[in-house]
Image 1 (tube, helix red, strand yellow):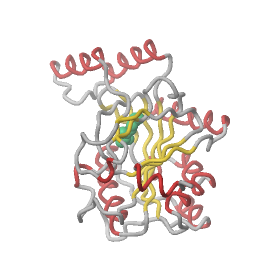
Image 2 (cartoon, rainbow, N blue to C red; image 1 turned 60 degrees about the vertical axis):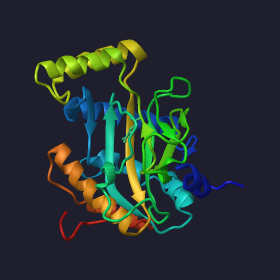
Image 3 (cartoon, rainbow, N blue to C red; image 1 turned 120 degrees about the vertical axis):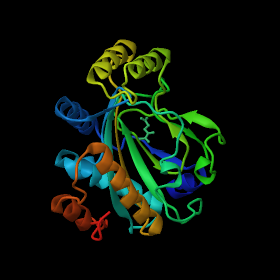
Image 4 (cartoon, rainbow, N blue to C red; image 1 turned 45 degrees about the horizontal axis):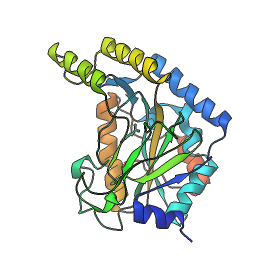
Length: 274
Ligand SMILES: O=C(O)CCC(=O)C(=O)O
């Protein structure tokens, strides 16, 4: 029988169905909605909030949820793993094919090796079982150092399902269509090189609601095996999160750390700085 560990090591991802209840999904969706009413970083006319695990306690229950930890125990096939402190929420963000390795900058050693086991969880608020707008992956591409090899599949997730994927896998979110690309181009003509203007974002929000009825919302966070690959990823990713969020905090609250420790999961304090 194929275990979750077999699947993630062979394919680079595994889907767990119905991990969260409808009530839990409604709570998560409403937390993302309310958060973005008051805060968030506009980028390519979508909204994101990096470093949400450190900056916003409202999302802690998800990271330390017993079923989340059970799913991670299954993919690692061991109890010993570490929360990297990486977590972000997204609203109408679009992504082309990429790996979450910062093109190699997240790691200090060659990382296309079996010891690199840094696994991200993606939770999608909407039903992507037929629209192809959730996560797409190239099967087995976590073992390949390019963005083009591997059969591409769209993951047909429903609210409550989660995807755990190797951060080295080539993956994409919803790609921008011709109108959205046109909007970005128009913005650039007016000097908005990275789609950061709020007006542009509002226009795109209206377009997305008109096109799909509701915004695409998602939540991502990362755990890893206790080794150099995870520690490198955690530190360099935290630098990126701080830079993008404009914040300065990088240590998890005592509350979330203690919660994870009480369930046998390690956390990081970056005691020597970033
Ligand atoms: O929005 C998505 O579906 C994919 C997100 C993604 O690719 C990322 O966070 O690296």
